[in-house]
Amino acid sequence: MQPILLASSSQYRRSILAKLGLPFEWESPDIDESAQPHESANVLVKRLALAKANTLTEKHPNALIIGSDQVATINNKIIGKPLTHERAFEQLRSASGCEVIFKTGLCLLNSGTGHSQIAVESFSVFFRDLSDDQINRYLLLEKPYDCAGSFKAEGLGICLFNKLRGDDPNTLIGLPLIGLVKMLAKEGVDPLATTIST
Image (cartoon, rainbow, N blue to C red; front, side, top):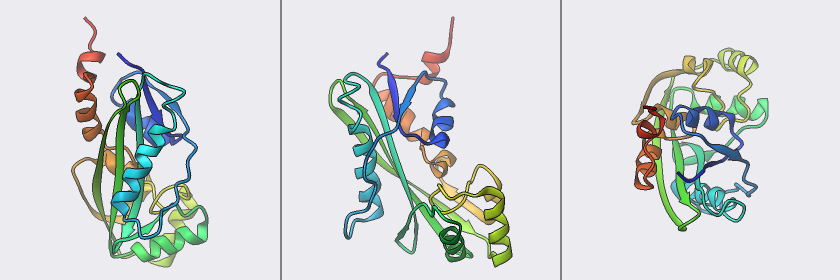
């Protein structure tokens, strides 16, 4: 089996990928993640997922390289990682009582053949009506400043929601596993066959 490489420094994506039980390495891709003028969320995350995978092809010429990128949108407006408490507060205040749609770009690139598979997965989060005190309390407890949308769904962030809608809950955290398993199958990798020992 070709080596599997995750083009990401995200601990969240690493923990999701580890669920498949496949051996993998990870490496941080060094790319500019800025949106281009008038670029839609779908186009942005597809472009960045492919770019992340592509940056590692020269160093890893015969690997299955996974690239992924995610943005959150409110009313079709892209909101990124807040990085500061103040910006996170404004993001959550904007999300209060609203639907936030997460777009996650996924790419599986076979650097040996140059063949790439790219998809975009959507996942909707419906927020409760939140008070300023609730928002501040949440941010002080979890400090989700490196997360698109200013929350960690795998933690206390679940308290912010009324409901979730999507095909794969892993998508919300940043790596659509159901889609990835389908892509891996096209490259001859089956996590069930690989991890079962006889």
